[in-house]
Length: 113
Image (cartoon, rainbow, N blue to C red; front, side, top):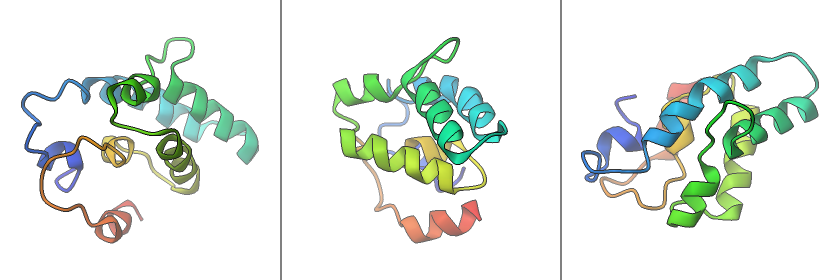
C-alpha cells in the first residue's frame, strides 16, 4: 500500500475518512470472492460498500462529506468487480479530499495486476 492515497495524503494523520473503508474492506473482499454471477457479485459488493448487515459501509458517509460523488461510487463499484483483488488503496482511490502528490492510476493498476 505504499502508493495508496491514504499512505501519501498530507492529511493522513488527521483524516477522519480512512477508518470507514478500513472497517468495510473485509466485507467487500468477501463479497468479491463469493461465487455467483457477475450481477450477483456486483450487488453484494454494492451492499457492502453502502453498509448492509454487519458491514459498516462508507460510500454514503463519504458522499455526505464531499469525498465521493454518485459517479465515483458507480466507477468504484465497476472497478472492484473488474479487478481480481481488492485493497484499501482501491477503496480509497476515488477520494476527492486527497491532498498530496499526483496519483498515477496507470502505476496503481499495474500493482493490482
